[in-house]
Length: 612
Image (cartoon, rainbow, N blue to C red; front, side, top):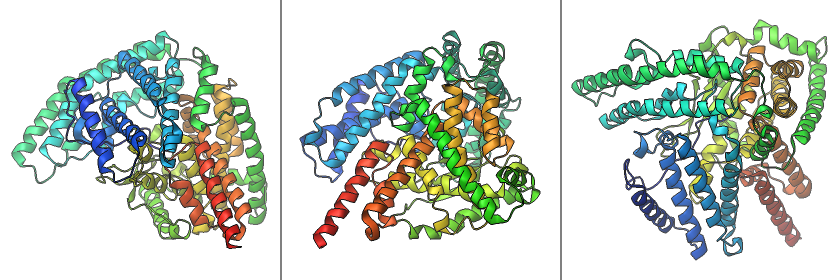
């Protein structure tokens, strides 16, 4: 799973500054766009140059509109700002995207080279998804148990604090935080008014997270973290001055704003939250879910088709589990084996430090084996780090945060050390394959290094590809020297089963009106995951409708394309070349991926026939 704050980097940072008039900023963005096209070194015709100028201008617009996204990938131009999340800002961005879609109609794909045709198709599809979903008002649910304004301090972990200016930028951002909180509050009030809230049972988890921001000592605030260890290059006098300013801002502005927000949340928002889970309860909820299913899978599959696909995959994977248990010599059936895995203490750590060491050891075992399966590997490194303690009890087993675009921060594989006695050893290999390599880190870092592609393709992508690839990466463990014993083999199958169950559970909750307990029961029956993980996972699907559909749909597509290539190419099939073909265009839609793989197969087949 990708960290929810994954976003895009920026270019031309010399020109745009906070506070510039909008017209001047737009003009400078176009100047940046023209310069970027001129400097790219790629030979382009007039239509191609106009298209890339539009891409660059939109990139600049995105960076201005979403400054925390820019900051996370190393663009310091907007380090004093939070995004404008007012209702008016959402409407304004919607109108902007509609206008851009109108401009895209001016481009004839036949006048563009192949990569530009792909870029045009992907860019248009991304904006169409945004425009299609806007009327359903999903933006009126700006936070949940996994993050939001109450965890905004986590942004600091992605920033560089090297100079006095870096700390001053953070202080100014903190001064502006009350406005961000107030805008978030108004979004939530509108959500209540229009019948769009998450279930109360889940949102009760958020109370503790907001309370953690209401400190008496500003030095205990999570927002104060950057000031605890300041660089030696900053003098003691300057450091003391910055710390004092931070303490004052946190005490006078940040904490009071969170206390006001906590009262709103407890007294006004929680009582209005829904009793049951499911987007079907929202205005036009059933239609909204179909839109989100299309967006997250990039297919036209209906909720019923996805639900049926999930049950089909459950039956197939269950048969594989039975074979593992039979080969293991275990005296019992699959259900008994799963109970043994869940309850035997030998499969669990008692010390979170030991759990972290094991995650890191597995990652290092995988790294040198990757050359056997990939012709091209990313240059950007990654690290394995704990999930922040504030959110660890309420979030999933692991997630990935991409590196900074400017190379100032490596990719990060976050692992959950909360209650290590509930974190099975037999999940570590499969989880590392998914979140780190050859899953998210390998794919995303490679995409970021594709210098000839537009930035939106290097730093943004479609969930079905990103998560589909990561799930496919789990199946490569055998070739990388993993899954050498039945528990780890069952761990892999349990994770694949987990994604198959997601198809059933997500559609069950949001299309077929399942209860939370129904979803938990299906997970308990078919996977070896612990109850804590299952409850956190189900709550994630409840508050993120449709996202969980992407994994299996994407993985099935990649597996099908590989089988197709192996069958048609025979001895000419090279898995390293196949993987390079899949990854060389960034995170595309599944339709574009299929076109690219089929063209590669056709070229290889034609070359073979010519040799004969």
